[in-house]
Image 1 (cartoon, rainbow, N blue to C red):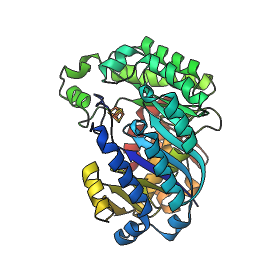
Image 2 (image 1 turned 135 degrees about the horizontal axis):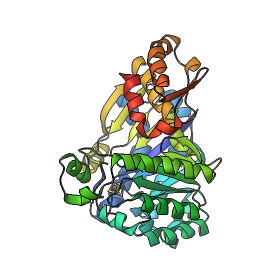
Image 3 (image 1 turned 180 degrees about the vertical axis):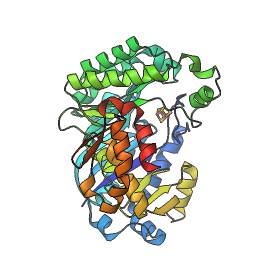
Length: 387
Ligand code: SF4
């Protein structure tokens, strides 16, 4: 069995207005003790899991083939800290790494760091580009400028890191149909191997989201594009990236052939992964657990010799079915009803028929997938299927 390892680094230089992640701006002096706590969690994970009743023999004998440093902004850490964490994974697990990803903000990339990342085994960098418009970046509270992306990408390639992923966001303040087209054109010109496109999330978890919900004017909320423009921009990106040879393999993700994210596919395929660090999630196949978000509380728990889990749950059969549908339909390949529990598949029959009539899903024999032109409203389908 293969296993993915996720390392959460919950620190950023500043807080973007649209961010709804549990990340914080802390003194750089906190980075080294945090990295040491993560190393300790990895080194002692067997004892922690045994005491908490999670984990399994299958997990312990699995081969780690993907590692993902996410955040937050893990590229802020000293490369030596990242290297130490990777060394601890090598010591604690059986490893045959295919893909080792580091999320990075473009302005944090230097030639020295890139060389150290490559030497540590990092072979993929995922950039939070978000936009090629300086106006959109500034009005969202981002630290970098368009030029930083042009500076950073060649540095990484010169260091031998030739699997680059760029993130873009649809719906940033001041985004227009034309500026969105420009961002896509510039992205295509830089030819990353992988592209992730997210639509702005409007919820209570971010300052901009709260402002939009309360119809306020702070954080450039009045300059956020309409839902219609956001949906049109998504469809435009889908068609343009497809015509440029990018395969659309998940609602928010495109890749050149053979460059789909091996780590992230594990989430959508319900394959096991272990998360280390504050707020990191884990899935053993039978259990899901998540560490506490607060990095101080996390480190204190590690010091005290206990798993810093804030939440542990056994996955029920019903939950497993729902996950198969929700995560499976996120993939453009869709779900295969013949591989699902037959009685559960039967309970879906009526709902699937009405969604097909409404043009929201497509069905070919036992394969069900979201209709390509309705991907921007996928949540409606999920709500209907899981209700
Ligand atoms: S860089 Fe990413 S994680 Fe950090 S504040 Fe901005 S959106 Fe949030």
